[in-house]
Image (cartoon, rainbow, N blue to C red):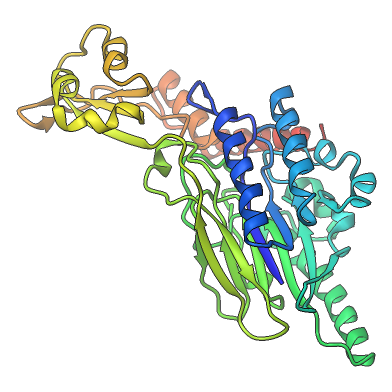
Length: 395
């Protein structure tokens, strides 16, 4: 059976302040064409379908068009991620299942797999484990408040259901079904970027790969770089990564989707298919005059540009001047140098695009009081962040 694994579409997202709807639409058009050409038999989308809990009208329309196109090719399974509203994304799920669009966004659906059979006769059970906000689901799963605990409890449900179905298949002489789990989580060992929203609970954001032992493949979402997670068992864990770069920390990523060939037995074969790049991304560094006149930067004029300007004194109208040469310059950082050496920073600021919400609060408290934030202040800030995340999840 041939399956395509993708995730983290973040429909409706902007890059800095630039909308990416056209680029996302181009990816989805390409995806449909790829699925037709490669005779894909199931499409798995492992969370963060939208970029926010209340998506824009454009984002909703884009998803509707994509699903209408893709479901003509094969069944689609989608789970909710930490950016999605599980309730909104799952609305109409029962009705959509009748046309082979399967949403999994609640605890109640974790042990309710989608059972598909490939053209070669391979039987595959696909389980959806949506993003599980620990304070919100710990009661439903009767476990501690940590990502590892809620994922372990969820996978216990999966393993129990899988064992029962495998026993039934054996009793009838059928072969053991292959098993795929879709999950949206931060698994230990994964390499993150600045684009992923912090999901830490009490300072612990990750869960070990061993949580997922007992299945054949784990189709992960959340981290934006395509990567395999090493584990001690035969379970294969992979992040497909996002189809587009959503911050300059992803500048070096080779974006792709994963095609899985799942046979009745034996290892699963994985092929990474590079995704189209509507516009490249590049960081350029130097004095403003050099950046504006360097002929070797001609190629970068069509790219998304982050400029690190090293003038000792901030140049006037620097961004406006940059955009005359680089129309898609969207970010600029001033890092003064003198004689080729960085000047000592007079003031260190926390970049809210890279720091966690608690780090931002701690930096603000230190700025206002001239004293480091206490552990008690950080705990209050963490509790506030968790309350906001829970309210978004149930919105």
